[in-house]
Image (cartoon, rainbow, N blue to C red; front, side, top):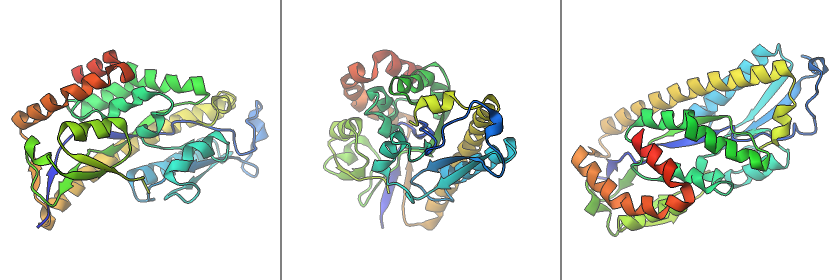
Amino acid sequence: MKKGLQTVFAFALTLSVAALTACGGQPAAQNPTSYTKDNPMIIKFSHVVTEDSPKGKASKRFAALMAQKTGGRVKVEVYPSSQLYRDKDELEALQAGNVQLIAPSTAKMVGINPAFQVNDLPFLFKEHDAVVKFWDGEYGKKLFNSLESKNLKGLALWELGYKQFTSRKPIAKVEDFAGQKFRTQAGKVLDAQFKALGAAAATIAFGETYKQWYDNLPADIKKAFDESIQESTKYQRELAAKLDEESKTRIVKSGKLQMVQMTPEERGKFIQKMEPVYKEFENTIGKDMIDAARKM
């Protein structure tokens, strides 16, 4: 029987609509009447997950809200499951103006600002609410604002759920990680966390229009855009939380994996193991940001 461990590391959240790009050859008009229901502004929204995922459903909700709030003068075309671009190509397509919105993981922003690695630091946040508070507050805004130096606009954060570790061998405590190898996304923090645990990582791939575009949107369309982002973000987070609980229940009922709930004592041992990792990335991420996250 395969056995797995549910370990809550840093809550892995997706940076939604992290950037905007030129409207595919359709420059934003200053005159709101330039776009009509018969001649709408087209916004292409590309992401790499399925339509029935929380991100997929929220992106469709965003499209519907934009159509409703603008009376059909804006049409959002959603392309899920890498229909247009693969995970590694999305940001480049965005910067080239071939799409207007993407929803990449925060890991994809590390090349622009290494401080986005704060999201990968294991056990940094005490609980889910602390993650939301961090990203919706001062430090989340600081990270989003850092994208503007590259003419990008960060808008909201969508959730992917908790990191989970599964193994053919039982893993219930720190020592159980030693000598094992785990598949993971690329990232220096992720490599460091496994090294600290005596394990190894095998990297796998997951299957910013220019800010001026956003700034030049007609006032009423920008208002509709911001409202739609806020409403679809709330919807996405609710879906992600619901899916996380449903998935947990389904795994337990399947009988194919044993889910181990970490005790406070064992969690403390993991945090102790991760202290050198926090220290290693203080200069890269910022000690103030790491300390703020731990205090949330």
